Image 1: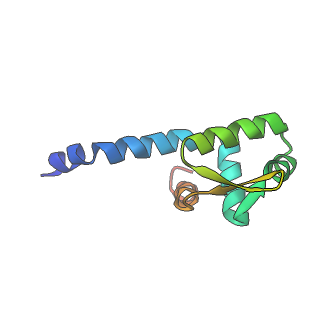
Image 2: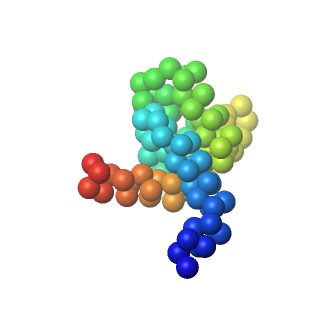
Length: 101
């Protein structure tokens, strides 16, 4: 029965809502797009490209990392951010292509 499947998938539904909330900000969507195109970037590259304050970009990067959207790679003093799963960028692309736009 359909209702039983929805109840059984409640944890997955909750996680999907959590991820969607985590990326539901214009700057975060831009960052995700940039990381999807470039594999990994440091904070400087991101804030310069988006013409935004470094502290604001850092806040969004840390938030998305804490929520499991991004991870980091350290190289010397540099920290490079990357998408854990590029499927999140595909979700955004699906929204772009939908009738909602």
